[in-house]
Image (cartoon, rainbow, N blue to C red; front, side, top):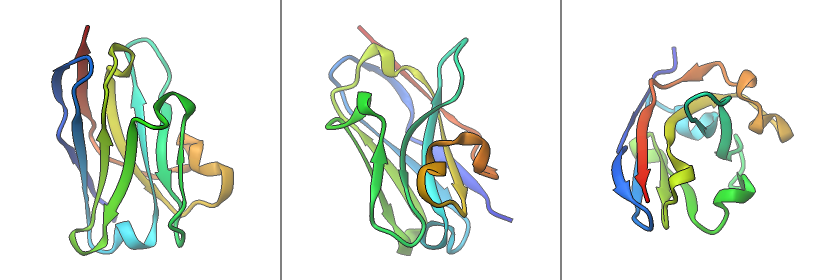
Length: 125
């Protein structure tokens, strides 16, 4: 059973930075595709960034390119989402997800079987 625990959310001002962490059960980070999603009030869950299993390639939605960076530490079984120059529209609950995915399915939340509980990120203007 894969377990994921997010941390690092908080209340910040526009332009600030946060680093989210997703601590995973043993070997998850190195053997699963790992993704970050977010859900704002009244909106659907949205893909943010991902690593593909077996690859060092990353994927981001256009609105966070150049501001967010996904990374992982296999030794610590942890995935990070470094978020710089935060904007009020980044406000959401951020979720970490894991799954054995390939190709474009990495952007599809329904393809990930394992999820963390979420961490709130609030950006004030």
